[in-house]
Image (cartoon, rainbow, N blue to C red; front, top):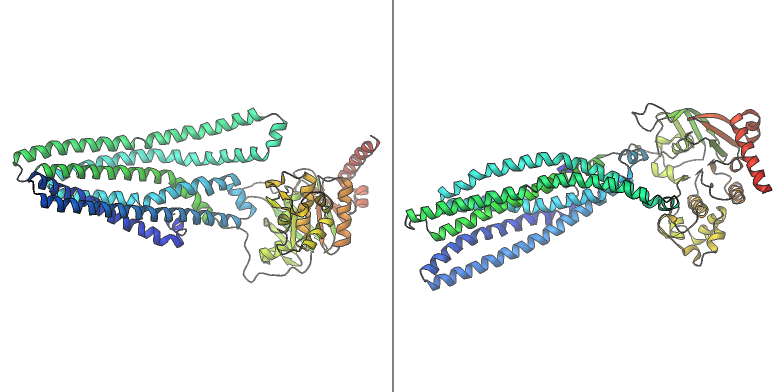
Length: 581
């Protein structure tokens, strides 16, 4: 786990190394100050002013350089920790970009957001403490012990005796706190998921007046996170009183035995100046242990975050381009050969079963079926958004697994059920299909998608700014923009997954006519709920429970397939009633 995270240090390696170096010099100088101070007190007692000025000057120099190295270590630490966090987020984000749909399903989007934000922040804080405080504290402890032994070996053993008590207490506290933190971050994922869901569906929440219900649901989740955090923090909070108790006990013991030793030896073996230095060293020693306990507490909290981050960094996409991959898709012919598919190896039921299907290049194929009949799953196998569990999918005469992924997906445009537009202008959104497309090409594809007319109605036309998620355009406008974006890729295969459901039947018909006239060589697959959207297709596929129930033309299915006939008659009757009204 440490090796995995260390890969994200990269260009900040120098700052990471310099931080403990500066800290080392800072600690050495700070430890020397009480030693010099003891001699200064002795010089003041002897009224030796020359020695007082020399030692005073030396103390000022030591303090100034200690401050300088402290500033340098802080600056280097900030640069290293912030840079490390930047690289870690970048590595996580880039890794997620390589994931297939099944990889994303494994983690869930809300969990990935938590790992990119909260978890990275926790690891950043730990990294900052490790390269600075975790170096400073042990060194301060060791140097303080060494100087204490130089001053008085008998009193210095007090520090060594109290150490096992501190370490033992720390181990008990941490071991009990870790399970809470492991549980907390799973609840964080659930809480983030709730927030994302409600922000996206805010209009639905308000339409059904469910604000109070959703607020109560969020409150329960938030309270659950708070309760676990409170228990964990309560345990970790015991560090401070434990450390302070040990520190004050040691100071009392040192003061008592130090004073007794000074009196018994009449100041020969041990004097007041030595006692003052020993008290300073005891404070340094135990304060360093207190800081170390804070580091351990932060590391304890971030260990769960580090594990979660490494899970993402180590996750390999199960969809990769093969060696010597094909880089040219000859045509839009599609063949499914004995294909079955399930979303997880552990799943008992196949989402698709025994699919055998041939689609000639340039054909228009309609797909109808009940909700849950796996229509979207079927078309997701064509651009390798998922891989078939059993059987083979061919595009352009070759197994899709033999293609370079980028090449394959550039030749297969998919307009998914959930139409997504990004914040930016209409031009910027359209150029997702082709970043080098000219303005003329943008207008051409928008005319094909029946989008140009409403775009021209905007004051800024193609420079109109689209809000995040496309909230400032209607559902039908969003669908047409997404279709235009897909057409801009000049694909061999165009898949519309219920992508005209929000447009009226006239516009739907105009889009299909434009496809027939303008892109006759492109294979077009249209998933729809309306029979009217697919009745002029070369073939219509009826899906039922993950299998192909029937294939044929509109006329064939009307005569031979009861499901299609019932659907057609129901929709035709509804359309006639609407026309009469």
